[in-house]
Image (cartoon, rainbow, N blue to C red):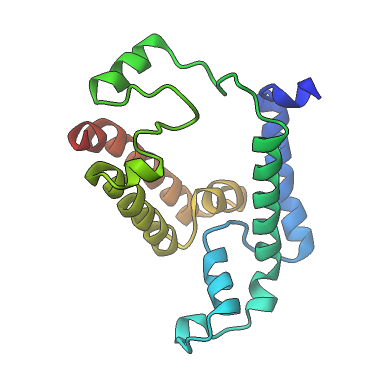
Amino acid sequence: MDILRETWPWWVGGPLIGLTVPLVYLYGAKKWGISSTLRHMCAATIPAGLEYFRYDWKARGAWQLLMSVGIAIGAFIATTWLASADPVLPISAETWAALSEIGLADREGLVPGSIFSFEGLMTPTGFLLIVGGGFLVGFGARYANGCTSGHAISGLSNLQLSSLTAVIGFFVGGLIVTHLVLPWVF
């Protein structure tokens, strides 16, 4: 069981992720991603009568709902039974120094608890990052017609130019936020 608590090398994880694409296509789906699952969940549960939610979600999104349940179960198993006290990747001293300079000195857990916690949510910075950032990520994923996993894994494997454009945009946006926005926010 200790082998499961260790970080898997890229040459194991990468092919496992890559094998999901043909499996999803064999199942009959033409797209693979998670961003449209919220729409399917709303269409299945909210009888609001909104045009956006009136479609046959069972035919278009049942497998995505099942995949979402599997992701939640997998996350629970990983954090409950397979969790390790060791960090996923050791962070260099230079990175810690840069993070400390902008106010992120919390080294516990995977994310800074000073921001990503209920107490952090009640601060202006935490609210901006969690709620504002969450809204922008959700809106951007729907506006781009897919999220990073859908475009980077499924779209690029289909050689779609729109997915290449989206992935480049995701990376450029991430670099801008990391180097320009976060230092300004903190």
